Image 1 (cartoon, rainbow, N blue to C red):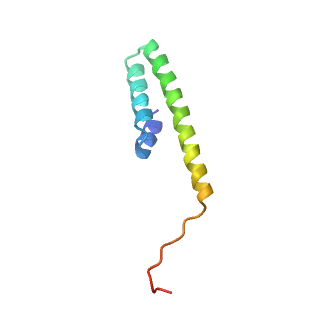
Image 2: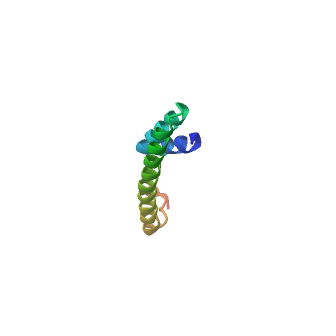
Length: 75
């Protein structure tokens, strides 16, 4: 869970990061109901994030490779 949380933090997925933290806290408190509830939230946020990332990467593929910038007169 810590690795997932760190990965979410590094790409700015704050909702996913927050849900992972809540899940970890609930489990650390040995709160079985809280663990189940927050795990469902983690799964829901994961599905949302996955869909957003898939859409983003699809747009990148459609855009094609980036061209490198050249300074005027450098040719």
